[in-house]
Amino acid sequence: MIDAHVHADTRPYEDFEKMAVAGVEKAVSCAHDPLRMSTSDVVLDHINRIMENDTKRAAENGLKLYAAVGIHPRSISKDWERVLHELPALLEKEDVVAVGEIGLETTSDIEKEVFKKQLKLADELNMKVVVHTPRKNKSEVAKVTASILEDMIEPSLVQLDHIDSSIVDMTVEHDWNLGMTVQPLKVSPDEAVSMLREYGVDRFVLDSDMSSSPSDPLSVPKTVHKMKLAGFTAKEIHRVSHSNAAKFYGI
Ligand SMILES: [Zn+2]
Image (cartoon, rainbow, N blue to C red; front, side, top):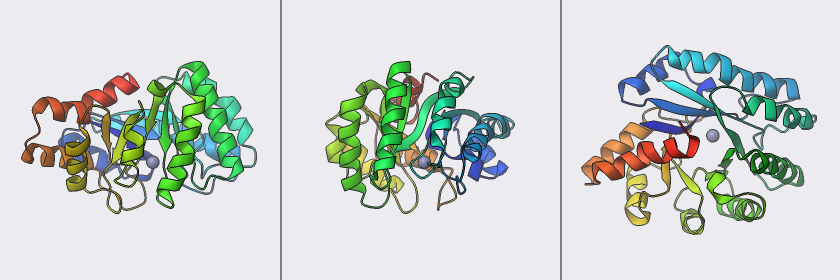
């Protein structure tokens, strides 16, 4: 199994062992806002920590961790342009598989500018992007996010994340990969199963988004278990819990 979106820097060492024991072989840890991102140094140190420290902590437990690096909409420091300038070199590093997570939290002008600049960069470099949608005003913000994505980037490069029942209808009409975040207070394994039954498994990936918010490192295995009980075929389960993410990230 692949957990397509985690925040490994917020999690204890033991979580990686739990995931590996439950059959999660790979995960993608995305840059986010684990503390006040007051300067570009903090943002860059956070990104380096994922690439250098968390990949090692996970590997010691048998979990192969990859990184997505970028400026999260809640991590826009005053000197964010310096992070943007460093991104091309970071994206060339081993095990960095995408720009992310990026996107909009409130649709402020500065968020839009930082998001668009990173999409432009990803499109030019032909890099995948992991795109955040927020908890608050989700469908309104997702609409703005979707229209920017349509204008700025080749659809096959995009994974739109944290899909739930409020935005699934408007997102399935696009050719993006869709990240279904199974997390307490977001989507339960049972809700994920019913969405997959309704919309099919072709473009969905499963992720836990495990962070310092209420999270379950076993979200992906638990959803797979529920899919088995609900009668999905082994092939369908493999697509949504492994091969769609493997293909998207090239891992
Ligand atoms: Zn996230």
